[in-house]
Length: 156
Image (tube, rainbow, N blue to C red; front, side):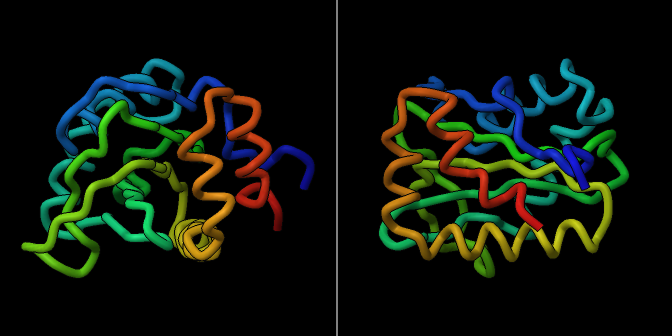
């Protein structure tokens, strides 16, 4: 599979973004995804609604991370985005409705099918256990560096 399943795109990496809420962050990245042809109209609202029912905040070895996403019916082509906010953003902890985490790295996913979603979530969970890699992503100032650090998401 050569580049057929490419999910990383330098245009989807945004560092030092000035957003202060989960909804603002989701709207910010959804707007880019829509303009770049990755998602259909209405995607942001679906992700925000899903986040209320199924929060995606996680703690990866001391670093707060959120993986907002929704069902594949709003996906045009698969992608993994990276948003590094200026300040950590409150997200609800996965599996809770009342426990908040401060997300320092957001990695919204656009998936085309359930099999891909499970595969990507598995890769994300492995990434969460890699403290050094997560810390490097959080501190990165260069999009190419982040692409290299996330190349593990492209591997089969």
